[in-house]
Length: 73
Image (cartoon, rainbow, N blue to C red; front, top):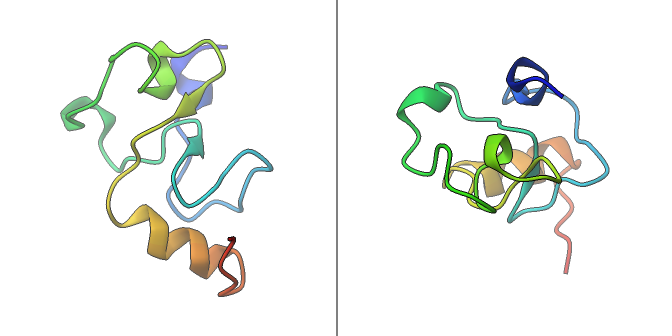
């Protein structure tokens, strides 16, 4: 998959692999300035599974909003 395919808009509907602590693809507004960009097994662009393991601090709140306000335990 190209890096363009891993760039997911912050407001896009949830992917089945999204959780409060990880996202499928990169949902950073500007991945070029993300502190975790290109870190192996942390950044979606540098992970074989395409999972971002350290999304922004705003992601948890956004996840809950996109998930209909439900919290996953």
